[in-house]
Image 1 (cartoon, rainbow, N blue to C red):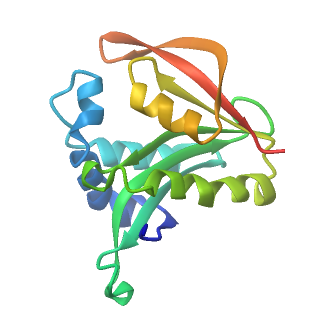
Image 2: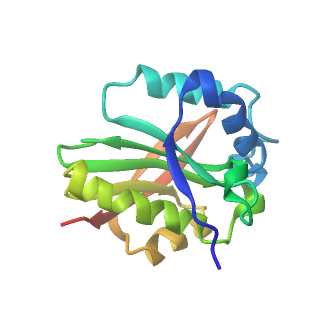
Length: 176
């Protein structure tokens, strides 16, 4: 049985340390970029960037009960979902990141996060499709999104990360 999750908008003044802990608990992600771990100020920088963006950018925390047997004991941040509405075009939502801390991976949390976000994007935000980019070397991420119904577009792009370039493969999902 999968523990139910909740999505919560993250606030820089409230959630920085918890987000930094999620980043720190995901060393495999940083290793993809040949980094020894998460930069110490990454959460603060990401939350500040979201706050400074034009309307439509959001960073949602993925929460689950701290004790599934006693949901009243509170929740813990186990992941993050970063997206932007009407980008790169009107009616398109772009998912910049879906990250689940490694101790919580392979439990259906990422799938649940998408299942919560998807109807909101279609019905409330009125998006027609969702787009995202996956690093070509991130085979696990690519398989994850394809299993959720996303399809490769055939488009790719190079993105500079530090002093290296990374190739992004683009996927899309039609909401209506």
